[in-house]
Amino acid sequence: MRTTAGAPETEALGAELAAMIEPGDVVVLSGDVGAGKTTLIRGACRALGIEAPVTSPTFTIGRRYEGGRLPVAHLDLYRLESLELEDPALLDDYLGSGAVAFIEWPAVAAPALTGRRVLAVRLEHAGGDRRRIELPAASARK
Ligand code: ADP
Ligand code: MG
Image (cartoon, rainbow, N blue to C red):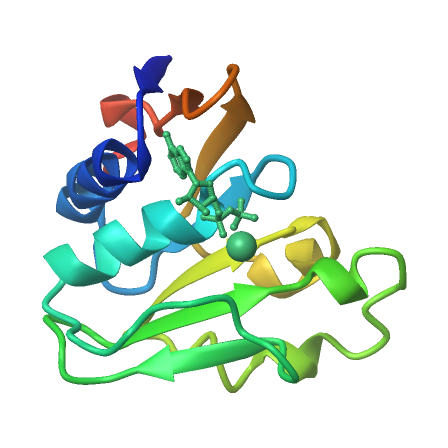
């Protein structure tokens, strides 16, 4: 468990996470609204060489980013979280085999993740601008 004192430190943790990622990985992020999930993903995307702005997907469940070291998808399933994912194929566009996918509010996506290596990140508020963040154990690497 690590503690960050501001968004730039959380982005730096995202860069650490990026160093663990291999093509095909799925990174699932859990934590309350404002805990820093999108911020951490932004840091990871920067480290992967993606220059486009990385913000919360709105009006869509996800975005794809090309132009980095590997193709990246960023999904935010908050609005699906209370529903059953009636069609896991809904996620297929984002879960291409050579891509890495970052998924906020991932519970509903579980049926679509069979056979993928899943790295779990947990974030929580720790007062003010502090956040406690648990990155995947290095031993989770293949
Ligand atoms: P989430 O995706 O979990 O809802 P966001 O990353 O979108 O969270 O938002 C986190 C907000 O909290 C941003 O406005 C960010 O600037 C702010 N913030 C303050 N301190 C931190 C920190 N230590 N880590 C990450 N974000 C922080
Ligand atoms: Mg978010």
